[in-house]
Each structure stands twice: as C-alpha cells, then as structure tokens.
Length: 140
Image 1: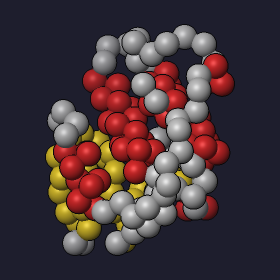
Image 2: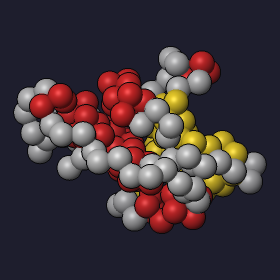
Image 3: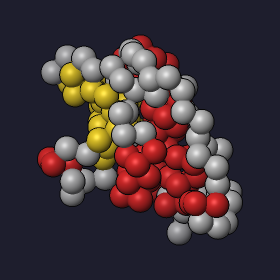
Image 4: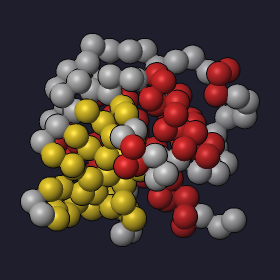
C-alpha cells in the first residue's frame, strides 16, 4: 500500500490500515512526471468496484454510488476527493502533480495537473478517494 493510500485508508477508518504514524512508512518512489490522459484516469477509476463514469457539461466525472470520486475540470486538470490530512501529504510529496487552489481550501478535494503528473500518485489518489467514499458504507 502506498503512503498516499495508507493516509487515506487511515483517515477513512479502514481497519486493514497499518498502525503507526505516516512518517514511519517510506515515501513513494518518484517517477518522471509526464502527461496523464483522461483515458488513463478513466481506466484507473472505472476499475474500482462501484465507480461509474458520467459527464456534465462535456466533462467526465467518476462517482461511487453517487458520491464524487473525481471530476475533470478541463483538458489537463482533475479534481479528486481527499480528506485534509491525505491532501496535505500529497501536496508535500508531489508538488508538481497536486495543488489546492483557494476555491478548494475548505473542501476535501485536491487538483491534479495531468500535464505534469506522476501517474502513480494520481492512480493512488483515485483509489484513496474511492476508499474515502466507500467508507461511508461501512458500519461505525
């Protein structure tokens, strides 16, 4: 499990997440950033159980049982659901891939710049968003 997914799993109350602090785990190995296509995002998101693609105003969005996992902002930007702790961790570890524009500061979302993205980090963030949304189905 990557550090991004570990952080998301812990914050989503995943009982399988390992105990300890986030800093106790090795960082995800950084790969050369490159262009991530919306088709890549679609393939990763739609492989997650229960995630369905829809479109609104010509832009793609992926939802788990109606709850937002990610949505396309434009040709090269994607907003992904993330809790605040995971969001901060992703921005620190992958500053060229992720950012939090001021309009999202108070929301549990992060923006991925697909033109400069680390593909593995985006894929991990999508899985983390799915886990976060799926956690709403788990009993307390």
